[in-house]
Length: 397
Image (tube, rainbow, N blue to C red; front, side, top):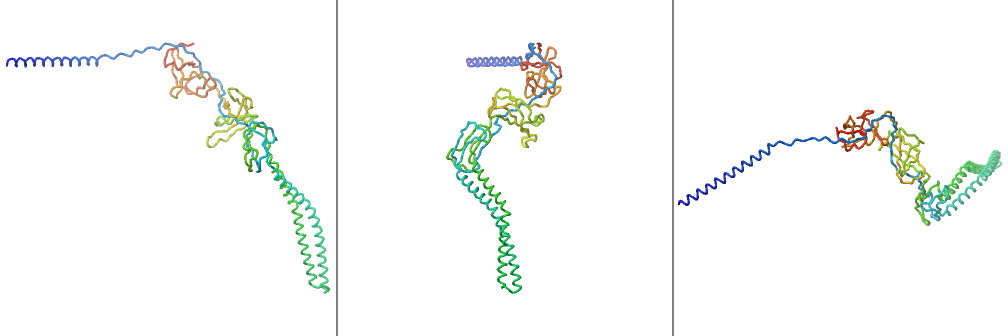
């Protein structure tokens, strides 16, 4: 019994010591947490950026001549789809794509036998019609004389009938012959009066037949180069069917769409600068559309250049002059910092730079027009602005 009591006392002492240890550990953790929570925060220490060298430029003010650069593709000054105006079988094809031709050169031929026969037919009809003109005039004269004689005979028989020397039937027969003769005079008079019209009609038919015969031969309408051939010997072609494409490459045009601000400063035959394959050449404005396109509100112009260093399909950059600007404020393009869709420059104030927002105008070569934000003569950082920050210390060169 005494052993049991002693064992319980020992067990209670152990539990009391364990609870004391746990309590001490809890108090220690709370104390540590309070120390961490109440410890002072480290203070931010600003470090001054190192001074760097910058190149300074001044805002200048002068009159400038801005240009609008517009890009287009070169195309031949003439392009023709040559078509047959008559139908027939192709019997001759004299050209291939890439061949040069001159005005009047024969390109293709159709079988013209039927057109030749038709021309002979209408030419013969014209001769017959022309000969008939003189015949009808002579017949009219004779018919008019016969009518006079017949009318006189009618009057004579009328007098004889009054004296009862002839029968009524004889007078009626004379009247009938007079009417018949009068009808012949009317017919011949109509024929004579319309002879000239019939002759002109036959001449027109002959001329049409001659032109149709000529149309069986295709000739070059201008000096150029054959670009495409669509038919071969032995093919049957219909009227208005394309036979080949011809282009004139002696000069080239570049067609452009420009804004109203640009068209206002342009004129026909005006000389402009054109860059083709990095080569600068002179071009001439040959067409201007002063009334804008109703859908795009742009004006179409054509600039013509020579064929030196030019080829159809090449890109051409045309510089079109705009209205001159007096007293424009200019700075180097390299001085502009573009950030989040806005433009900034760094103004040099003593030994520091100030970041200023500016409104940009048109770029002119290596300079750009400042519309707002800077004053004439103001010092700015000319380049390497991406490495700067506002209020940074600098040294100038």
